[in-house]
Length: 448
Ligand code: F6P
Ligand code: MG
Image (cartoon, rainbow, N blue to C red):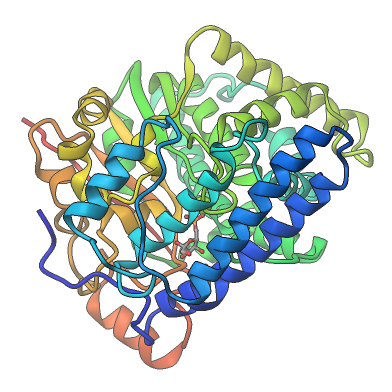
């Protein structure tokens, strides 16, 4: 059940895998240790401090293992639903492998699982999220783009008075195109790549205005937005799923999009799939989900916002919390999303989840890591069609329509004409990791 192309691995010096395993991960772990020390210094209870100190010591062991390229040991049974899956995959496929010679997507995910283990086996700090501060801080510095969207979309969507059916359809199509791109580019602010961002950097990454979107549409190298519209515009009262990526601004954009999908009547239910614990720095956990909605409603994250701006944010939050209370929006977190398996293994290793997703009318996968896992993170030629690249998730009986909205931040690229990727390989070094380019790709799934 593997693709015919080799997976990227840490020892591939030509790939971003090498830089990530050798440099980015130790830097991220170093910052996680600093965060935990900060928390330690805010404590007063002896038992809790001793317990947290042990978590820090375990992180230091993990740092040594990473730096010395240790063999990957089994995950300690901390009662989480994913332990058996991890240890099965380690025993069956990657026994004796090190951080550098296991497939990149597996080794990198393993590092985040080991980081969670540093806390999950403690007494008082089982759910501690070393990245929480950073996620909240970046969102609270995103006021420009947050208000740009809230002031435009707080009022419920409506048509011009006397609009004909054709005009209504055209209006819906325009909003769909725009919001799909808002949702796509929301993925640019992933914190694992952007360390120490200035306010200006954040602003540049988050421009959501029409002109900016028109200018960046040419950077979508494989663009199925129109195909997706053709599928969704025929839908009524459907179920849409989002396999989420990052918390804060990206999640906020996802919610703006999901809100419109409900208002337009395309969907009557949206299911959001998050992570059970801190994952790849900025990914959404339940706490991040609650934090976003409740901070919009009750917090004072943006002291410089005008009354109208702050009111628009509250109006959105009120509607979104209403969807949640009414069961139109549902947040879920299956253990499979925090394993080292690629999504080629989703039908076989998480059949319950596959069955659940097969009932969806369209599953959106957000971001770079989800795209790597969809495509097995391997050296497929760029012209490989998306539905071939995602294997069983396109071909298995019951496979739902799958959409990937991804800004390109790592080597694997599919669904893009060969001449385009060749030209960029020659002319623009680093185009595969810069986040400047993107793909919006769809697979129709098993349509029988
Ligand atoms: O480190 C691997 C990677 O997939 C990068 O390519 C990317 O920067 C990061 O992880 C996560 O990106 P995203 O949040 O879009 O999945
Ligand atoms: Mg992420």
